[in-house]
Length: 202
Length: 202
Image (cartoon, rainbow over all chains, first blue to last red; front, side, top):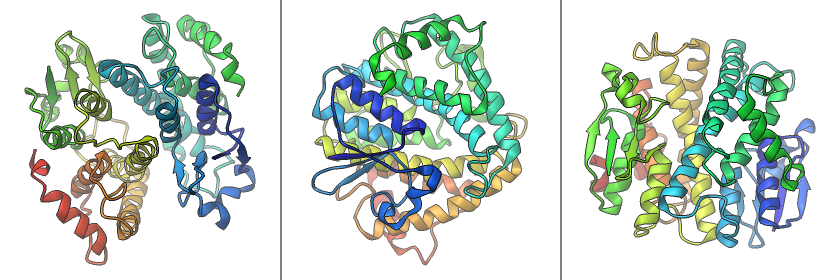
């Protein structure tokens, strides 16, 4: 197997952290999005949608989408469980991971895509939409602070993929100049804790 | 258990079809989004994010997000498998389900949200963003037609949750006046087949 990765992007980081938490090592190939390498024909054969990360299996199967790649490794090596345990816990982890994707990663990404130089000419930017997403992302930091007032981790009392998605979203938000603030102590406490895990540097 | 549902919305339909394919019956409570019932305080206790569907378990736990609810029932009753079988198959189903959500449901929903009377005053509409999404949704119908040229179902040779997401997205696209066209024979063949399953009427 090998993993097509790009160190600076938030979604490949989700997979790297997931693998580090599992203690799994996979050879990586860097695809430089800054140089638009994802648009080259050789990579379009790997993923026609021109996104990283992608996991290429030994039989040539290419699995795109961060959560799909993580799911592959969860089934191959269930311990430690990062997608939840029993039916209820798995459902709650899925719920929280999706809420974080929608409320946090979605707003941060759209804010960046629609206002940044990086995406100018690459996507059809709608600046008003970008600004709305930036404002919403700031609100969602407050929402996540409230969520973390009631529990140690995003989906409960155990570290899961929802924490990985949240960490990558919060850290990526620096591209829209958004950071946890002094009046978000629960978000800060959680962010310090998940950032201190060795996996965070993966 | 009970399921908070709204017959006219696309996401609750995903769960109803999933349950029908599993042969599981669950009592349902209608939450009329047309009357904004999701904003009432009693429902905000069920889901602070004010969305349906939500599954309420007997212990009071509330599980929101369509795919999280489906995941709950997949673990409780694995047969027939709608999230895939082994590690590779589960990963591919997750990949295709997410691609359909992102490319199809995402575009259709944003096209509708940002241009319709229904959402006027409810969300901060950005018409240019809505129109871009409508154009992209039409392109994605062509993309899905190409995908279905190579396989019987969205994720391969077996009906999965990716077909459910795709069916609900394609049918919901009528709100932006988008239907499969004559020059999309693979999409039409697949759409006729999945619509003929008893679950489609759930």
